[in-house]
Amino acid sequence: MSNQSLESLFNYTPHEIQQWLKERGHPAYRAKQLLQWIYQRRAASFDEMTDLSKPLRDELQGAFSITVPPVRARQEDSADGTVKCLFELRDGECVEAVLMPRYGDGAKTDPRTGAVKNRKKIKTQGYTTCITTQVGCMFACRFCASGQMGLKRNMTADEIIAQVMAFHRSEPSLSRIVFMGTGEPLHNYDHLKRAIDILTDPSGPGFSPRRITVSTVGLAPEIYRMAKEGWKVKLAVSLHATTDAKRAEIIPLARSYQLDQLKDAILYYQRSNGRRISLEYLMLGGVNDSRKDAERLLRFCEGFLCHVTLIPYNAVSKSEFRSSSQERMQLFKDCLRRGKIDATVRYSRGRNIDAACGQLRLRHEREQAA
Ligand code: SAH
Image (cartoon, rainbow, N blue to C red; front, side, top):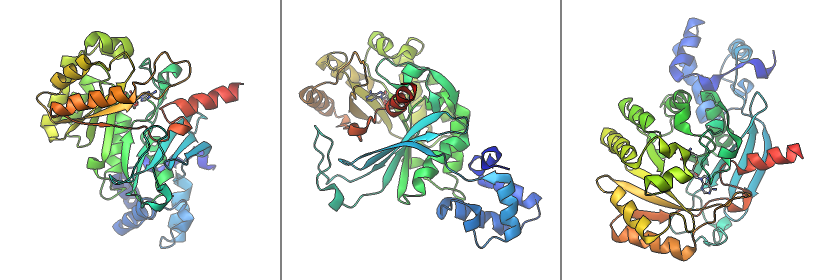
């Protein structure tokens, strides 16, 4: 049987792995060993698992795969060490994911080029990966490359986890996961939940839910559902505008959920687990970056614990938008800070390698089609 037709073991919770082994008469400690090999020692094949008996390894090999998807394109930004990979899924669809080193507060970044000063000499503080949850996206935000492709399909839990493991195998200090790649994570709720349950299981990969961020365009019903189901991850909301009219102009979904409904959902989530909410605000020159916008944003932030991340717009091809200027972003940030809101500008990582979501895949598809 080829690897392709085997079920991915990444789709199994540690409990289900224990059950599978138990049903076949293996002692309980085998599950512990197997999980250690997969997630702590990050083995790439069952053959490596030398303290499992050969018959058990053969049994596992005949039933499961632990392969990660092949890399079809790879780009590295030498300015900041960001690596972006285009992974090919079983059905030939390609998705992109990013690995970013973290340098800590002391590191100096050039805001124009994104270059981290003396990068090679600074010790990294671990790695963050930005993961994709859907092939394409149906929400068609006007500024986003992913929306140009429409939604092809949801990704399964094992496909989501396999991206993390692809990076984790080469980078043991990968400790943070952000679901900010292509797609709308909450539109793929069930698979995402399963993936996060497995990734945070202490008997499995054991990632801390405190170090996982789920970014949403603002699906209010799913935010309530997260709260009711006891999710512990950090919630990031792509706000991007401070009036319903402006938001609906750039994010079509905003016609369904108005800002006050979104705020109610955010408050509900915060009350359920006390976590600070991250508000993402794309800085679009002349569109949403006025002083009035900053004041309205301050009012939106009243009543809950939040942090605002201002994101310079990363131009995608044929875009009608441009990023706000440095000065404008600074004024905007100062206004928020004067209002006692914690605000930072997130200079996009890997800006020299099409790092805005969907850009690498779009380019790859165009090249294939040419
Ligand atoms: N659908 C989710 C997650 C994917 S996008 C969401 O909307 O949050 C992750 C973030 O990148 C979002 O805040 C999105 O608005 C932002 N983004 C999309 N295109 C961008 C671009 N060209 N430049 C900068 N940020 C962009």
